[in-house]
Image (cartoon, rainbow, N blue to C red; front, side, top):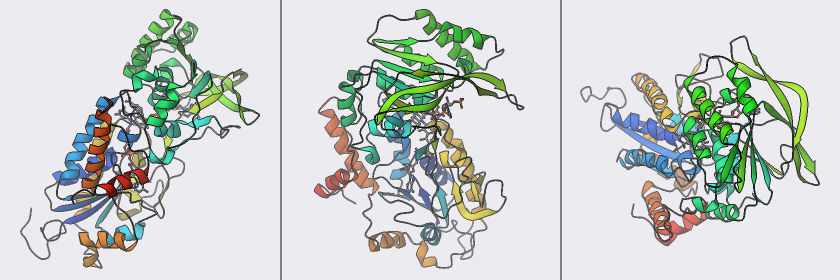
Amino acid sequence: MSELTSDAPIGERPDRPLRVAVIGAGPSGFYAVAALLDADLHVSVDVFDRLPAPYGLVRYGVAPDHQKIKNVCRVFEKAARDPRVRFFGNVEMGRDLSRDDLLRLYDQVVYAVGAQTDRRLGIPGEDLPGSWSSTEFVAWYNGHPDFAGADFPLHHRQVAVVGIGNVAMDCARVLARPAEDLAATDVADEALEVLRASRVTDVHVLARRGPAQAKCTPPELKELGELDDVDVLVDPADLEDAAAEGELDRQAEKNMALFQALAERGERGSRRRIHFHFLVSPTEVIADDGAIGGLRVERNRLLADAAGRVRPRGTGDTFVLPVSAVIRAIGYRSVALPDVPFDDRQGVIPNRDGRVVEAAGSTAVRPREYVVGWAKRGPSGLIGSNKPDSQQTVDAMLEDRKSLPPAADEAARRPAAVTALLAERGVRWVTFADWQHLDALEVARGAEQGRPRVKLCLVDEMLAALDAAPAEV
Ligand SMILES: Cc1cc2nc3c(=O)[nH]c(=O)nc-3n(C[C@H](O)[C@H](O)[C@H](O)COP(=O)(O)OP(=O)(O)OC[C@H]3O[C@@H](n4cnc5c(N)ncnc54)[C@H](O)[C@@H]3O)c2cc1C
Ligand SMILES: NC(=O)c1ccc[n+]([C@@H]2O[C@H](COP(=O)([O-])OP(=O)(O)OC[C@H]3O[C@@H](n4cnc5c(N)ncnc54)[C@H](OP(=O)(O)O)[C@@H]3O)[C@@H](O)[C@H]2O)c1
């Protein structure tokens, strides 16, 4: 670090740290915080999330029967507890703070808002009651406040899950596995009740391409085959066609071996079944008196495009799957932030190595604005994939920091300016100490039932719990 001189760049004097706002407290946001804290610099970071609880999809996406994965929150907690970091839960950019506010209050702003909605199939009947996106279904069973009280009646026997990525595997597993397996997890109480009463017997997983192109990873596929009282049905004929396609990558090779083992095992008379259907695309969710009367699907064949990618092409040959509910697990999608550029085609904030640019393909950088995680590169990748991705953005921020001009209004860069503005607007923010209080409350509620936690699922419920026993700040 350079000498303490009055004209030293921002971040090189303890009395003038680099002030950074991170919008979104999911993995990518916290990996960015951790990278900033590791830099040889004086930093002061405020992390905002629209929800009172931090950790994004680790809390509201990762399946309840994958508890161990959630241990990664300890890494994020360590960053949040650093005295250079403040957490502002229940503060939404676009509702409580604008882009202009952020650029006035901070030297640099990082958008870490993930992908809050779903991709669309674009077929008739997609919005019928009983046709849900995985974004909704997953958030509901994980106790996301936006979906508390949502209606997911599982009184049908046959359900389709469209897509064959890991989210589709999560949905199929949660639907098929005995509800009692979930009773010892942090699944939302209301979802557990519905799953206990579920009448689902058959889950149909629909892949538009073949088994060799399945996006799901081998451990997740293997797990399906290990569920109690569930048969996983694969037509051996589908595997023969795939075998003729030539050389496979490692994931495809492992998946094919697993599909092969499942095909050989066949039906064993279990209470529930998961059926894999390959080379089919939904073309219509069929309405039946306001409900779903079936799912029309078209058979596909595979064609390689000019770049060698294997694409599905409809054959015109259709049939109807007799399902009464449909879960569309075909990927998540980012939502545009007010006044921030958005690439509608890719569903991302356009950027160059994490520096926000004016539009897709543009080289015109928006100074002091950055992006990380799913909002930067699209909705794919594991929790850990966000670490190098956030580091890349922070490297760009640190490089740009050296030439940051002084703020027009230096007083606005003081940490107290943020709390003053939020207080003036009547925003009820949740501090990290508040969150730790809620966390302890959830864990204590869980301990009474032998569960890791019982989630507080409503924002009002969380705020009321804080009012009842305010945390020490
Ligand atoms: C269903 C599902 C299950 C998954 N399971 C696994 C798994 O088991 N293992 C694994 O390694 N990976 C898993 N992943 C992938 C992993 O969750 C992602 O890689 C990771 O969460 C992406 O991080 P992110 O920070 O970009 O987005 P997110 O985790 O979505 O975080 C974004 C945060 O931004 C906040 N936010 C959004 N808009 C605003 C706003 N306007 N103002 C303030 N805050 C805002 C959100 O509330 C959220 O907290 C799963 C993904 C899904 C969808
Ligand atoms: N346990 C875990 O580790 C875990 C759990 C959940 C999620 N995740 C990760 O989170 C990320 C997101 O997962 P995801 O499952 O949402 O996305 P994904 O891996 O991209 O899978 C999306 C699936 O939807 C299909 N699809 C897309 N558009 C379609 C359409 N119009 N019609 C029919 N099918 C369509 C895709 O088929 P094509 O391949 O043909 O495009 C693919 O099978 C992934 O990186 C995943 O690994 C990890």
